[in-house]
Length: 342
Image (cartoon, rainbow, N blue to C red; front, side):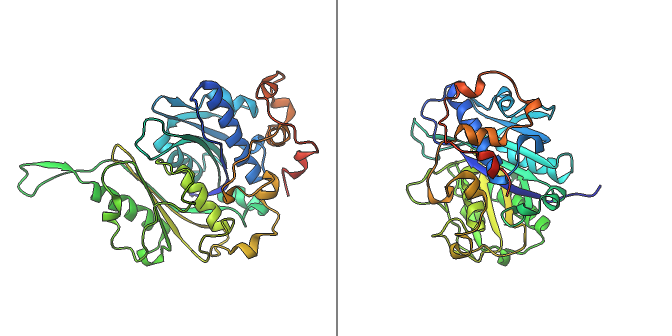
């Protein structure tokens, strides 16, 4: 069976959730999903599969997607740690040409009141990218991906054993790099997110580039699941993050979960170019115009009624109720739907 590469065409971040009520999570889910669809310049009618994630007692409710439209596309509920990998597999296997995945990122600090954000991604196939040519300049190709669970290893005399976290990380890294067909010297950005007590940088000493724990400003949200950091890597490769180094060709993101699972993504621009400098993109009409601001600058704005209406499915597939009114979204004025596509 012919496989496809998965491309990140749109990303969206909600504001931080102060109280994890169902209403707050639902509103942030709609905000993140709307931003990701706006960023990609598509509507929910283009989505043929959605993935809703759960993280411990936090859950993206299936019914939240009803706000975008009811057109028969399946909605899968998966663990937050495997949501993105499941989305990649769906697109790579050509079961889906366009997947909307929405999950959580939780602050990495060990305090009792950890901040939470909802993060959304639009992943598309090679075929979708070809048929929507305007996406190629801003899409990020996932050239390699791997997910490994804990590796247990006994000592040479078989008398004792334990978790070999270094081997877990190295196995995931090797698998992703094999898919991407690159060597360690081909990685220019090495991003690490972990919530365990063991520092995975110990397993990455063979790389020529020093690992960075975050590509965001020091006062930004520092998530443990890596989803918010992935948004920042996408913006960095697009050239939206003005203060970040440009000309990087390949990024490797490692996420080490609290239960010992290791997830690795290798990213590059879908058009094959190196990461652009700010001067090259500051006047380009892209997702920033559809959003109305540059999210890479550290600002997170609320969506408006017009933003949501611009990305909802065709009117015959949307509910006739007051669900949008209950969200109490601000009204921006003007026709935002005209910016849904460039």
